[in-house]
Image 1 (cartoon, rainbow, N blue to C red):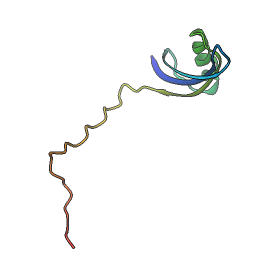
Image 2: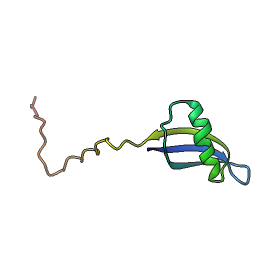
Image 3: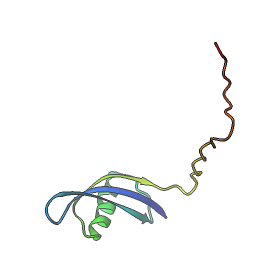
Image 4: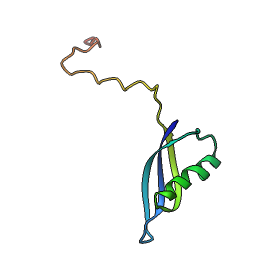
Amino acid sequence: MYRYFISFANQAPNGALAFGNLDVTLHQPIRSIEDVNHTLVHLIREQGFHNVTVLSFSTYHKDTPPASAPARRDQPSRRHHHGR
């Protein structure tokens, strides 16, 4: 399974330009613009959006390590200061 975050523009019911995003899980990876046009646009339209243009998409990776925690302020700095 391949999980994607998709951002898109669409036409709102009042005709105005609107933006949205979806979290989508697919059985096959996205490999080309044709996959985007056929699969993602279809899925977005199923959600009730009209005149959809996909702006971007990105995959979530299971093996991506978590971001490292920021250094605590009460820990001493490892930088050495040389006075001049």
